[in-house]
Image (cartoon, rainbow, N blue to C red; front, side, top):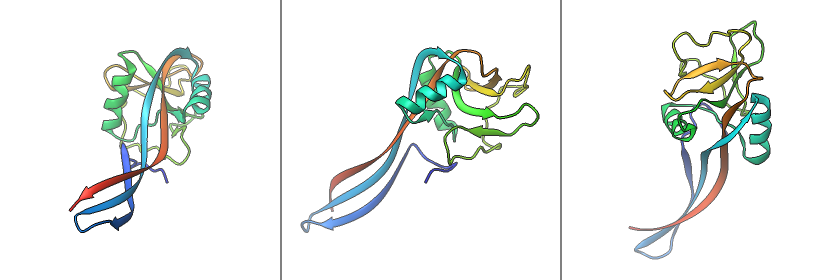
Length: 158
């Protein structure tokens, strides 16, 4: 269901009924998500656990629209997002949200990053919309992702 191209709102029209000659009633199934800035300092792992318990997961970034939305939530302070490298011996990054692949062509690294300076395997979103790697054991505020399916009904005229 989720992939690199998940837009902010993905809607699929499921049924269209002709109620009268002048109107239609539509059921629309939507995948909507929002970001929540958590103003509490935690390690990356603690932040992920918190987000999974109280929301969906740490924030996943799939495009520049997401980056801009996240920056508004970050309140000008670096914040953990859901990107992590599992070992310091390679440069393979993974999103914490299952089913979402990391696309190395759609990244927002700051100049010289990722530099893995001292085993920096987790990623922060900075105030200038770029990513930096940092030690997962450091404590920072973080951004969670909320996602859910909703069934919307819309009455439209012809």
